[in-house]
Every structure is written in C-alpha cells, then in structure tokens.
Image 1 (tube, rainbow, N blue to C red):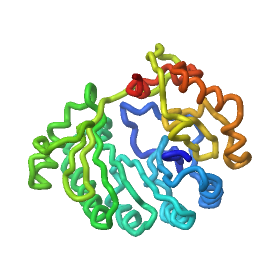
Image 2: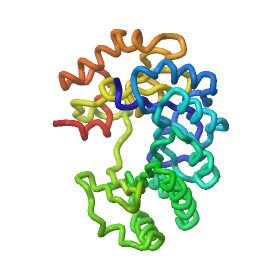
Image 3: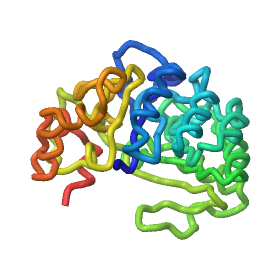
Image 4: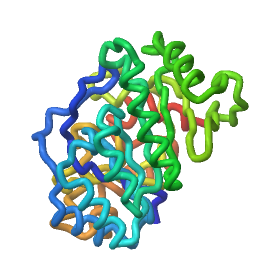
Length: 280
C-alpha cells in the first residue's frame, strides 16, 4: 500500500509560473475511460489519489466525471491547484463526495508577476469557504520562502483582514502550518529546485518515492514521484501492464534499493532539491 498515488489528469496549465519547469511532453487529458482503468488498477495499492504532477486539474473538462469515478471506486481525492479557476469550479468540487482536500498554491500569484491580489484571493477564499463548509480540507500554500516571497506580506495582510484575525500571530505546528478556521490551513514552505538532469548533484540520500508514493502521467506512464516532470524515469505504462509487474521490474527495484541504502540509483534523483529535506 502507498500513502498516495499522484494521477496527472492533465499536463495542460493556464499559467506559466517562474518556479515551475513546465513540461515538453505532448499536451493531453486523461479520458474518463482511461481514468476508470487507472483507478481500478490502483484500487488495491492506495486509498488516496492526488490530482497533481504537471498541469492544472481544474482545466479538465470532465473533472466532475473523474471525481465521480473516484467515488465509485472508493478513493479519496486530494487536488492541487493554482486557484485561479476555483470560483468557477467551486460548485463541482463541493458536490464531489470523493474530494478530501484542496491545496491552493498561493505562491503562483507572484510566480506570474502578481498585480493586485485582492480579486485572486477573494475568489480563493470564497471557494474555500464553500468547500470547508462541506468538510473538505483546504490548504493555502506559500511554498516560496527563500525566493519569490516578496509579496507574501501583502497576501498575509489580506488574509488577516478577510478572516478578521492576525494570521502571523496564530500558533504554528512544527512545520509552521497555521489553522485559520475549521478545515482551513495556511502552509508555508521553502522554495525548492526541481530535479534537473543538467544541475549539480544535491547530496540527496533518501526519498519516499516507491515507498510511500508513485505517480501516473496522463498517458499512463508510471514514474516514481510527482517531480519527474518529463517522465524521464518511466517504469512502465499502467494501461498496458499491471502495476505488480511494473514495480517488480529491475529499474523500480533498483530505485527502491538505492533509497534504502541512502545511495539514490537515478541521476535525476541525485539532482532533486526537494529530496534534500529527507536527509538524516
């Protein structure tokens, strides 16, 4: 069992954030038929599907149908979005019994040049209120500390005014996360370097890939984690092979053994800025 499986329902995005590497893969959307196949083949491996890798999941024209299939197959869905489309999709999300959590990357605001944050944050908070009322967890992420965080003060001030509290003075857990209201949280984090085959090695020792998580791209390609934007570490295809066979293949086994020994087997893994946080 994995704690989560990332499913990229589309790699198409409506923004071009300066912190995101984007992808040169062919653009596409996972069809409902293929999503059902993926869900059925993943059913015995996890209880949580995360609509995330590349792309903006709220752009998927059949999002409601995918969420319905997730419910039919017994999954809880966590979804990561830049938040720009939340006002238009709030009703769809609020009506989905499978939806467990929505994470909003507020750092995408500055990542696209900013402007006046009021309209953007109004839309995010309005949609979050609807979802929280339905018991859906909503996380407002500011994962940009150490770079790209010049507008965070404006964002925090706006949230304080809108919610009628001093966000910065709220108690934080060991990760710095703050509870803003029932089911609504603020999650800060450091900006990180995406794995890049041209970058220097990052002294990575460990990652939860293939232990706690795997990812499936929109075309069915199985990869070890959600940061392999180009699918360079393709392990197989979920639409043509069973996951047991994919995970038992030599490349997947080498990746797992490498992390267990604190010696990552893949060159790309050794160049992942995010994975450094797992070093002992």
